[in-house]
Image (cartoon, rainbow, N blue to C red; front, side, top):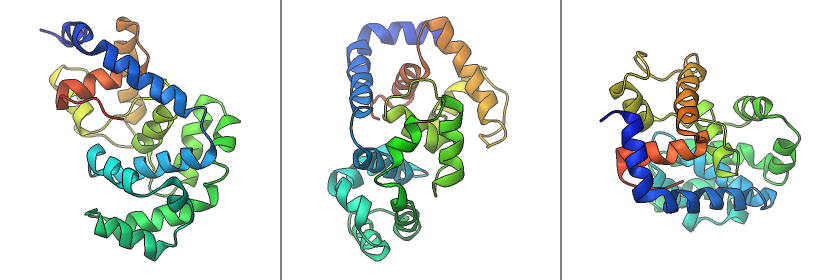
Amino acid sequence: MNILEKIIELKEKISKDVEKKIKEFEEMNRKDDIQWFSELCFCILTANTSAELGLKMQRNITPEEFACLDEMSLAERLKNLGYRFYNTRAKYIHENQKYAHSIKKIIFEMNDEEKRYWLIKNIKGVNFKESSHFLRNVGYKNYAIIDKHIFKIMKENSLTDEIKITSKNYLKLEEELKKLASVLNMDLATLDLYLWYMETGKILK
């Protein structure tokens, strides 16, 4: 069974759950700056860890706390919650707090290409994957979140012959996923949920 057949088969099983999750992202698009900043912190905290661990941090640290706690307090909270990279990520979040009350306003004024590059340039702890993850989670649907799970599927299904994900080849990999999404008549946000489910058996954000 090729990847197209696998996804078409999955649609019969999980399409309602996928649609529900996409609606949650659309709802987040209407929330305020501080909620967006919490989502940005979640995406920073999932890098090189897991979505589950990021969710645990987000459930236990409020948007207001992400926006105002000092670096030492953030590190202590993350450490006590069992987060591995508590010092580094607390430093990133603390440095990013200057955007806690303006992140949505800034992103709203940019076109799709500018949004991601602005995040990569200005937000600590963010590269292509994390910026794409954040933008998807706040309601933008045309960015691919290429992590180790998605890359593994791409390799297994001959969608790429790249050795690893890098900043230099990320957009090339994204183009291959755009082609797949187009054939399936999906946006990249929806495709990501199907691919992630294929690899993990879960629908997370």
